[in-house]
Length: 165
Image 1 (cartoon, one colour):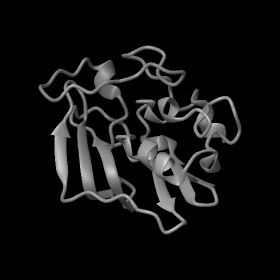
Image 2: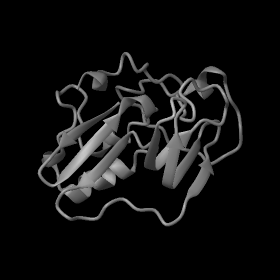
Image 3: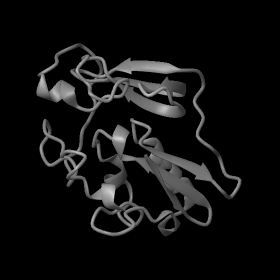
């Protein structure tokens, strides 16, 4: 379920169900994205261009933005699929994802399961960590944070404090 945080010039939305806890948001600007505050996203605490740039670092599409000030919206020329080493497929472009329940969502970014063990297909849910999935691909830097305190063990969705805001 996508939650919307509306600011004056930019609106940020978040879907915890597709977040894999890379934590680019938390590293981006603590005045905008802060776990121990409700709401945890305050889009007006930074310039809209800065908020958009941070949101676009989220590889999963869990974070999206919509400019309300007429500023640049997120666009990608074509579609690109990059296998991440020992992890999901990182896809950018105009991605139409059909979920198991039949709903369709269009995303500019997504991390899609390639280990076959996700319980949230077609999205990655970090099950590749539990099964010790190994495959070639590009390295992806995962930053440790309150939602990813250990590299191979992100917190569960039920423990994630963002589910409450």
